[in-house]
Every structure is written in structure tokens, then in C-alpha cells.
Length: 266
Image 1 (tube, one colour):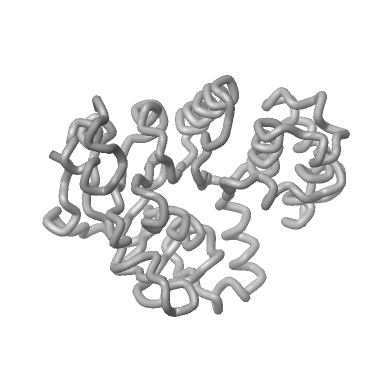
Image 2 (tube, rainbow, N blue to C red):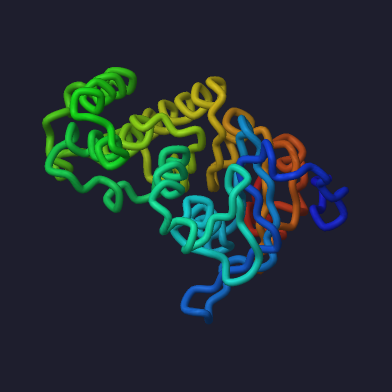
């Protein structure tokens, strides 16, 4: 049975050595539509955490909060031991340090890939973080070679398939070499070959020591890409946590949060 976070022993460690900490975080869109309700979550360096739950449960909103794109209506969020708020992110030094350490790969690559061609797209992040043109160019060449997308380098975004756009979006994040990678439904709408490639890449990044948090519905790859699963209910709360095998074995839990249907063989 997966652990109920409300009955788990409370953490006693300080924020030192903690990558992310959310304490009783709530968030509502337009102050009317709840997305997160009293969510508490700690992510430590090198962890691979999967956020599980039905559509609309709050997974994507939590990723946006971890990336400093939205801010809690109530509760507190710290990253690397420092509070992350609208005020702290207005500080240029803090903002640049935070942005250089956290990378976000959106579910919809069209929302992320916008430059005239692939090479310029990948170079955008390093240049915004203040790297010189030569160093940025060297990093772009390195990540293009690492992901095997040399043939795409001079193409415009409209000339790319969905899987190719996903690779470019990932390249535009990896080129800044962030400590933390956030993935929103990374394998959604990809063909089987691209899904396999991306799952393998996430495995390699985790083995290299990256901290990875991703929202996913893909239960079949959990054991490869996650050490810990955090399960959301449709009421926007965390209702269970546990290892992949533990969570996947809890059929009642998966049914209750609408991750499987009654006729499923899982």
C-alpha cells in the first residue's frame, strides 16, 4: 500500500541540501478555479520524482510553480534553500541563478520552440544567461551532437515533426546544463520510437545525477524513470507517495485517482 503523506513522519531536515520544498501550497486560477490544495512536497538532489494523476489534478500547475512561472496563493515554496516569490525573482542576480539551475520542457513543444531556426533556438538560453557568443556556439554544437539532431540545425520550427520539435525543446533546455529538469507529459503524442528515445534519455540524465520531476500518465515506464511517485487526487491534493512498484501494485489507489479504469488488467 502506498504511503499516505498525511500520516507519514514529518521531515526534520532543514532546507539546506533540499532542491525544492513546498509547504501547504495552494493555487487557484483567476482566484476561482482550484489547481493545488495544501500540497506539501520535498525534492532532494538527484531524485527522480513522477507526479501522477488524472487530467486537471494539478500536476502541470505544480511544475509551473517549481519553475517560478506561477506563485502560491497560500503556503510557501523554496528552491535551493531560498524563497521563490515574485519579489525574489525580480532580483536579477537571484533570477539568473535560479533560471540557470532549473530547466522546463513543456508538454506542447510549439509553446517552447519559437526562433527562426533550430540552432538559434538552442542558443537562445545560453545567450540570455549571459554567455559569450563563442561559448554559446560551442555548447549548441555539443548538445546538437549529443542528441543526434545535426540534420535539423538549420531548419525552421514549421519544418519539424512533433518528435523533432520535442528533441529541439529538450536541447534548448539541456544546453544550459541545469541541475534540475522538469518534464510535463514528456512522452505524450510521441510515436513509439520517439517515446523509447526520450525514456532512455531521461534514464541517462538521472544516472548522470540530474534532479528530475515529471508529470506523466505513462505508467508503463515509471520503473525506468522514477524513484518516487507522488499521486494526486482529482481534488488537487497529494493522496499517496511511494516507489513505482508500490504505487503500481495498489489497484484501489489507481482506480480512485482515475489513472486506470475498472476494466483494466493492471
